[in-house]
Image 1 (cartoon, each protein chain N blue to C red):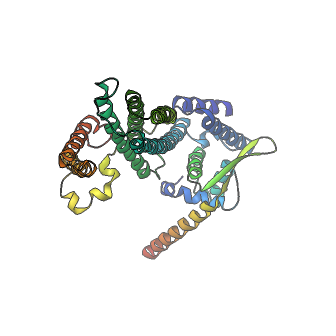
Image 2: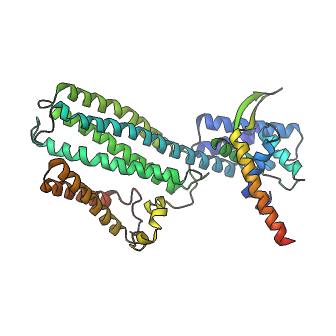
Amino acid sequence: MLESSKGHVDLLLLSTLAQGPTHGYGLVEALRERSGGVFDFAEGTVYPALYRLERQGLVTSRWAEGQTRRRRLYRLTRRGRAELARERGAWEAYANAMRAVLA
Amino acid sequence: MIDELAHEIARELEALGVRGTTRDRVLAEVRDHLEESVRRRDEDPAARFGEPRSFARLVASQVATASTRRAALGSFGVLSLAGVAYLALFALVPAAGGWSDIFGGHVQALGPLLGVATAVLPQIAFVSGCLALVQAFRIRREEVVGAAELALLRRRSNVALGSAAIALVAMAGFALDFEAVMAAWWTWLAVVTCAALLLPLAAASYLVSDSACPAAEPAGVAHDVFDDFAPIFRLAPIRRLGLVEHAWRFALLAAAAVGCAGFVLGWLAEGDPGSGLVRGGFEAVALVICFAALGKALGLRRSNG
């Protein structure tokens, strides 16, 4: 994973979960695909981040019966959506400022 | 490969003190992740997952931080309950016969001892409990907090719980020692209430001790009261007093303030400035002694303070 993306893991996870509930593996895969392979996490790191978000009440999780085994599905909460909107706004302001300076 | 990696992570989690449902859930998710990775024919799923030791350490640090914070908040809740009950027992004393001569109990020498314990220990419990609450609030957004900081939080909670428990025992002892001069209903109310409150205090103490089990992040230092109340200590007039650099100056100022408050309250309660002076002096001296005995343990002064 790029060093610079570490501080934005929460935003990346919340944003990915906004597409719909998924499990840890699905999150890692979606992040990799959507970023064109730039955000290539050490896959285990996603779980501590999810546990933290869950403790903060930004995501919720439950075991769901799959075809062959039980899987833990993560879902964005209402509070998580609000946090995502706030973080996204802050990130866009920062990115616009950087673009303006670098242009 | 899946079994091997899952066992290695299980071993690391066990070594770091992550047990029970938390460990089971983590392992079930790891297993599911790896099975999915194998099913999709990913290249080297174990390497993609990452180093088991650093994964387990991060999980343990998170669990240690969350459980210590939760135990400290739970302790404060129990302490609040005990505090309210304790004050209610005090408030009922006049209706139960009023305060009598401190040497008027069954065992003469016991009266003063119990009197000091019932007056000083609740104050230690209150101060330690409040410090733990403020510290837990200060670190509320931290994902991982260092072991030294968590140890301080547990120490503050344990001192508060221990002081409260001994104060309750002293209050029950006081009720039994003075049962001849107090109404029977108050004696029994005091003994039963104090005994009943010891149970939640013991449960809270167990949770605080248990929260030490998951290994916390070893890096980092414990902060202190000057960090807990940083916005106040940063105010220019207070900063000029140099309290952070000279912790004893802070203790003596606090003792003076507590002494003045004790003097005024004693005077108002007894209608006699002499009684106020005795009470104020006692409170100030008690604070200085407690600061000397518990200052470092409770993070009231830095190790070089």
